[in-house]
Length: 106
Image 1 (cartoon, helix red, strand yellow):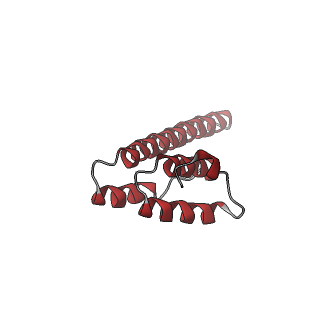
Image 2 (cartoon, rainbow, N blue to C red):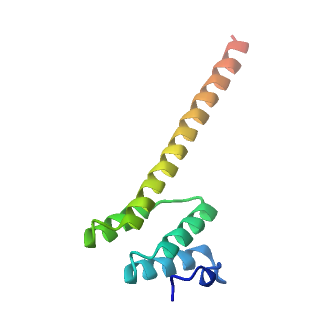
């Protein structure tokens, strides 16, 4: 059964293979908590949640009451927002550094 935690260690292969595998399990068993958790772990290793909102939209189009898909969707939105905030902070810091360098040369 894919619902048993012991069956979800990272399998040999690259992370994209694992993403493809979990997507096929989600397509077959969309309310399986373990597969959503495993997918989250893979995304955390990859550091790239792109495509996850589309996956949850597809899953929720079949069953709008799928709590696991909603939970995953909310997690992805938080992760993406944190990345956006980090980018803004880095850009602002870079801007301040450039201004400081320019002021030294005036």
